[in-house]
Amino acid sequence: MISVITGASAGIGEAAAVELAGRGQQVVLVGRNPAKVARVAERIRAVSGTTPDTLTCDYTSLEDVRRLGAELLSRYPRIDILINNAGVMTTERTLTRDGHETTIQVNHLAPFLLTNLLLDRVTGRVITTSSRAAKTGRVDPADLNRERRRWSGWLQYGDSKQANALFTVELARRLSGTGVTATCFHPGVIKTEFAPKTFMMWMVKNIPGMGQTAEEGARTMVHLATHPDGAAYPGRYFAKSAPASVPKGMIDPTLARTLWDASAAAVA
Ligand SMILES: NC(=O)c1ccc[n+]([C@@H]2O[C@H](COP(=O)([O-])OP(=O)(O)OC[C@H]3O[C@@H](n4cnc5c(N)ncnc54)[C@H](OP(=O)(O)O)[C@@H]3O)[C@@H](O)[C@H]2O)c1
Image 1 (tube, rainbow, N blue to C red):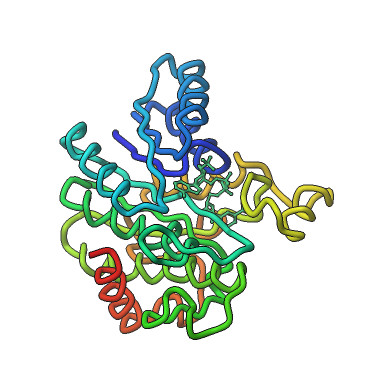
Image 2: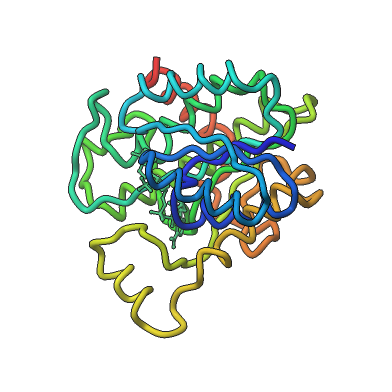
């Protein structure tokens, strides 16, 4: 079983990679920083006896995502599970070298592109780390960069995570009948390197009982990668290892298709 995990250099992705490798899966680690990914590979070697393959990619460059996709296609004739987990929350509005707002590119457009590049090679499941922040998202396919609306880090983060859920809905529809399924999930409120300069994460890390460990955050991801649920609920959003109800804006099929088309145009 070959699982490609992005954002595997830290936090939830690292914890899931360690857990899946411990259960005998062949994990492929994708991170941004070579030294950080190498540290996780060494950690996995210590628990499983096998050193996993590592690749690096910076999602602020779509050219780099295309290079990653080509590299994965050249190395793996089959990918059983693709886990789109890399993500950021930034407090300053910046643009990538591709001209997109950074949060929407890193959290949505880059995994959208990577998934499309690899899709013919994926045999089992596509799992995307969304967030309950998606529930308050107001993603506008005609204004992915929030140029025409007020930008704040959390507003744009919510849009990007709503985009993860809508991407999952449309991807599942497109994969219907192929045996490949798509799901997404909320990991919980987790003490990681995520959103480092925010008061929210300061509270999560410093108020006892407010945040959970990375290992707890990885549980739903591992569930979707290993349990029949991961194939039984195409297009669904999970929380606490179970399908969860969500607002209409996270599952609206028309919005999902419009977003797909806008995303394809943005990465073309
Ligand atoms: N923590 C929470 O409470 C929480 C709640 C809901 C959802 N999530 C989601 O969970 C996922 C994992 O986050 P985490 O909490 O584990 O945070 P984390 O510890 O900061 O890990 C984020 C991962 O994404 C990678 N990444 C960030 N920017 C990137 C870029 N430009 N290109 C490529 N990779 C990049 C990071 O690489 P580096 O190691 O190089 O920085 C790291 O591997 C994210 O999608 C996040 O939105 C987290």
